[in-house]
Length: 166
Image 1 (cartoon, rainbow, N blue to C red):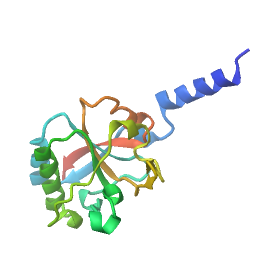
Image 2 (image 1 turned 30 degrees about the vertical axis):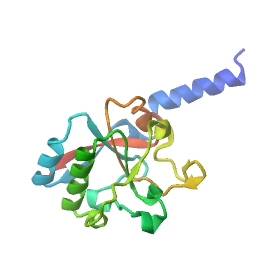
Image 3 (image 1 turned 90 degrees about the vertical axis):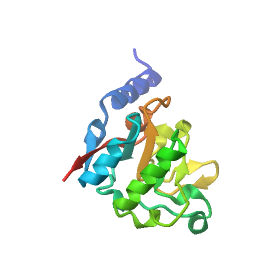
Image 4 (image 1 turned 45 degrees about the vertical axis):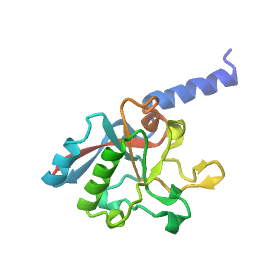
């Protein structure tokens, strides 16, 4: 006879393997103009983009970057990243400005760095880092050579973004 612990574990594994949300199995496709796509394609090919599977962004201009003075800390920003060099980070920030994300203009803010220890709950509502609540993350960038990046999709509530031209 199967114990409740084993049954719970089996159900949890099935949910992780097959998912409950259809969006998490595929990609979110975001249309951008050819100039933006060209700049995105010029980035390191290891760079990957994610959004929430439940509340995906429709355009890059939807993402808001809050400054330290607005949020008291960078945890209020809807833009997060991990394992990016500063050159790539500033290129992405420039792409956001060109895409119409007004809060990225004229600021030195770069969003919030969120380590891979948080990937399994990255897009979870009411997530905490330490004792500080963070705003709902909407756009996350990392690289494919980061350990555990798959957790963003498997359990973290994220879906990968593919950019297309109009």
